[in-house]
Image (tube, rainbow, N blue to C red; front, side, top):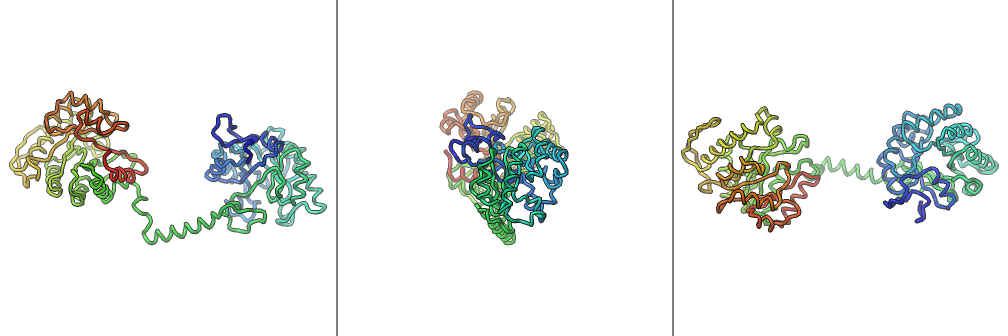
Length: 536
């Protein structure tokens, strides 16, 4: 309805607004002189759009035979074909009244056949009413369906299912035929229909019918004097490619838009322009993109860029995961100032002497800008058990402690000997790193577990995380500092928590604040914007 005093079906979010157009609202609209709008719809997407636009009723028409199935007429379409379409439209329509069109051959044999078909549509699709064609000849069918409690919309004038008997697509109701059309319309009303479609009828006849009937008249090419207007949406939106009836006003040119878009798509695929990097899943898993982020972060004033080290990053999400050390090497060549590192390396599943060699190499590539983050690795099922390794926490903790001892020794360069329960080395390591005596080692772990805290005390920093994966607020960071009493030069690395600023973390005793962003739809764009914006 177009009036601000709509008889029904307001599209506002007011709690007083009706949630659904009902049969009674059609007669109320006629009484109040408010125009009714209807469109055909055959699918969920179009129905959703029309419903949100405030269209009053959606007709799942047998015109789907032409527009969906490609038949030459509406005659071949069946109930089995229309029912899935109608079900989709019903699922989409939150406000609009949905009417199912009974196809040719499903009701003409008699009232019982008509009722059977109507019941099937109502039960299997959830439609709110049915429509059938014919005037006097269909009154028994209409009456029988209405007696069963099913609302019926009639259809007189040009009835597509009878086009051969009518001599094709011709105007109905001219001359003496006008009397028959009036009789048909009255017969439909008398049989109990709540509304009637007038198709391809002279506007003068349609005006007379509208004046004489107490039920609403819906125009399909029957002029402006009816109580409402119904259009086939593919005609109205410029999607149909065949001849368009004279009465159709095209409100869009969707066919032209789609045609041009398809040509552009084909050309861009041929040229390689599509897909571009921004159209790829796992953009942050692209080493080249990660290097771009590092350059942007350095330009934006950040102090460090860290990468996760995972074999799987939540396996069910199927995110791209690249090797951090290879990528950090590329970052080192593209930047001059920011510190670089993996946060954190799951040392229990790595050979610590190999990790040490990677770190020393990166330290030389970056001219001494490496920070080493290590931890148990989480989650154990993705990082260990999926590859046939034990995810047992105690065993991983033992391997981490021994691995840290080996890593510490190998990073210092020169002769080194270690013999433990799990690891044993006797080596002379060269070259030594740029940073002396070695790059700083930060130990990550879940707060308030005692093991990670005591492990971190032996090295250069502590990176606490919560068991729930949520960042720790400044008050918790302050409690960590009170527990550890860190010496000068020891780093407390805090993951940034929303709702707090850097000054709060600094006051709590944090020496580093890490802005770690979880995957979102625009993950790369979000990270790039943060990198360019700089610390805040």
